[in-house]
Every structure is written in structure tokens, then in C-alpha cells.
Amino acid sequence: MAWSAGFNLITGLNGAGKTNFIEGLNLVSGWGPLERGTRMSSLVNWGESERASLWARVSGERISDIFASISARCSLKCDDKAIGASAMRSKMPVLTFLSDGMSLVRGGASSRRALLDMAGAIISPSYAVRLYDYRKALRQKAVLLRRRMDARFAERAMIPTGSWLWIAREEIAKLLGVALRDFSELLASPMELRFERGGGGWSPSALEDFKMSLSMKRERELASGVPLVGPQRDDVKLICSGMDAALFLSRGQSRRAAAALILATALVVEQRVGRKPVLIFDEVTSELDEGGRHALFEALLDTGCQVFAATADDIDYEGISVYRLKDGRFALP
Image (cartoon, rainbow, N blue to C red; front, top):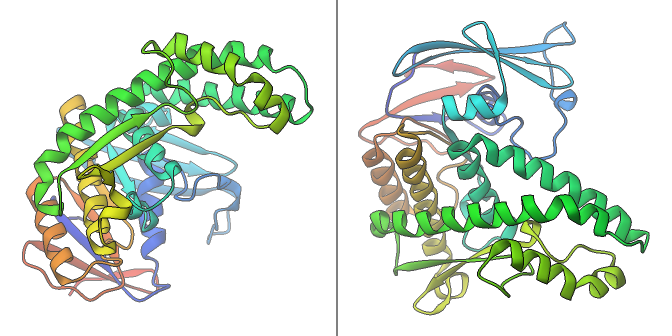
């Protein structure tokens, strides 16, 4: 079916298939299953074939047909030519945010790292490759530490990729901090972003900092059996009036600040790749009061991005196209 180039709101009762629809969009755009770590083979296939498939026609600067074949892995084709996930993410920039992704302010550091990684993977295809290589080396080091063995062999691969990620993430955090100023209407107070290197901070040079931090914490790592230095421990501190934003802001204000971070990410992606990203939200109205919904909807409409947002709430809002799902099928009003 054809969709509005603007704000598309997907409504329906719980179990109607809203999240399935969001996951389908996520798969064809090169991001894989919504929940990180989910195996492709665990996805439910309602057909008789062992291999599931998704098809989408995308229009913008050009019209392209995207095909996703899903079995043990997701294979993508664009206009009948095989394409990797990294290339697809750059070709069709899509930012997906789950209901817990809206809790960037009060959640743990992993949610803020994921935000940086999402932007980085779209801005630079090599970012995802470096992150994969780093995580592979990190797993090797973790195994060695659990066995109380010297892990310096694994660190040889971690140092160059880890320091590169530190530099890239710090730059993305700076860009987000600047872009955030454009969404002050969603913020109760100006918010500052401070990137913190995981276990580092001893030297301005990321490479030297990584080496020095590993050396200083080697004994503690051996004693604990846990890697204590590297991007896996990075965080972005959110500061309002000199305080941690999670302590300064109310719960509703925190949700709106999280929305501002999401829109700032979209702006950074647009500035760096030269195209507006598609924005996908699951449970977009979760924990937002009427004022918060109005502010978020107006901000989303002002971006000019194509938006797909799912909610169980029955909403009628000027400028938003509403599509209702029932038993996995759309029924236009």
C-alpha cells in the first residue's frame, strides 16, 4: 500500500500487529530484528516455506525495489542486486526507536551508546565494521580474563579499533549537542552532552589513552575477570543546570528530552549524509501527556522527515495520516 510522505500513525489494539509492521520496516532497511541479539531463525514465519520474505518499494530521489529474504540470516537485494546491510543503511537512512529507546535520559549507558552507534552506522559504513571487529576482540579478551589468563594478545586488535570508536563517538556526541539546540521547545532546561570514554580519560589522544588505561587497569581486570576499558563502557552524560538530567528533570520532562535527542540524531544524519532519514517509532506516545504529545507531534511534523509511528492510542491529529491495524491487516478510515 502507498504511504504518506509525511507522518504516518499506525494504530490498533495490542496484538494487532503494529510491532510486526515496525520490525518489517527495520529488516528491509538493513537493521535486522528489533530486539538486539535476536536470531533470524527465531522469527516467526507464517508461510509454508522455510524462508520468509519481505518486499518494499521505496520512492524518493529514485524508485527502488527492496527484497529481504530471511532464514538463518537476512539477505537483501535492491533493484535485483545483492546489497549488504551497511550499504543499505547508507542508501536508505532509517532511524528506529523502540518504546524503551525513548527513555534515553533515565536509562542506562547502553541505550545512549546504541544511539551513537545508530548514527555512526548510517554516517559511515566503516563504523559498523569497526564496531563488529572490536566486539569480536572484546569477546576473546573476556574469555581469557575469565580463565585468569593474560589478555594482551586480544588487546592488540582492541587498541586500534577501540580508540577509533572513541574518536568517532566523541565527534557524534558533539554534533548531537549542537543539533539539540534546534529542539529547545521539547526541553525544560538547556541540556549539555558530555562524552565519557569507558575506563579512559587519562590522555587527550584516544590511542595513547587506550594503551595507558589498559596498562593501569590490567591487574584489576585479571582480578575481576571483566574488561574494564573500552567503548563497551562508554557513556554520554546528560547535564541540565549542572546536574544529571535524570535527577533534574521530572519523568515527563525526561521523555520529552529523550524525544529531543532522537530528533537531534535525525538532524545530524541529514546534515552528514545529505538526506532526511525515515523515522520509525514503536509506542510513540508511551508515557507522554497531552502537552507532551502535542510538542512531539509538532516537532516531528516540522522535521519534514517521513515518519512511521505505532501506538495503541486512538489519535486524530491534523497533518498526520492514520492507518488502523486489526488482526494483521490495514483498514483505511
